[in-house]
Image (tube, rainbow, N blue to C red):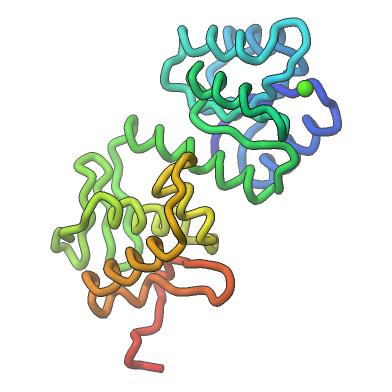
Amino acid sequence: MAHLLIVEDDELLRDALGAQLTQAGHRITTAADGAEALERLALQGFDGVVFDLGLPLVDGLTVLRRLRQRLPALPVLILTARDGVEDRVEGLNAGADDYLTKPFSPRELYLRISAILRRVNKVTHVSELQRGRFLLDRKNMKLFLDGAPLDLTTTEFKLLTTLMENDTTVHTRADLLREVWGYNSDVATRTLDTHIKRLREKLGAAGAHIVTIRGTGFQFQTEAAAPTSA
Ligand code: CA
């Protein structure tokens, strides 16, 4: 759970965002304009901020630049209009971690928020994640299978940790391409499939924990059936 600040002047959208993120398990505080956002940011600590770039009183880019001066590591997701290419570029330049183009689905919102929070957690928290036979040592960026370190490429590492860290969701190919290769890449789906294949080969029988969900994508399943048991 994270404490998030939602800054959006459109009341309907603000309420919808609040409801979706509350349902995803987060604690929500809202602000209706840029001035209120800066006030709230000065008064309390947040784990992340979601905000619309088109804001009255103090515009979104100004808020972003000001908060970045004071809080360089705070995860920030910006919301932009569909035709707002300039906004997105300016927003990313001003220090946003990622953006979402309106309209977006609750699922997209959930995944983006999870991704930016996770990126920060990796840097700030010394912790380990155990998923069945796999152990992720975030401090040293190493993965272990049954206690033995895995020799993975950077991409394979990112791919497996992305799946492991969010094992309650099925990751679509588009989600994985975005999370592992980044938002500005145009890597082909085939590249992803090749990496999954190689990763499974390296993991041997444990590769069965990476399950292909037909027509949807991939999921890490701790209780995956061994390929021979079918
Ligand atoms: Ca707006």
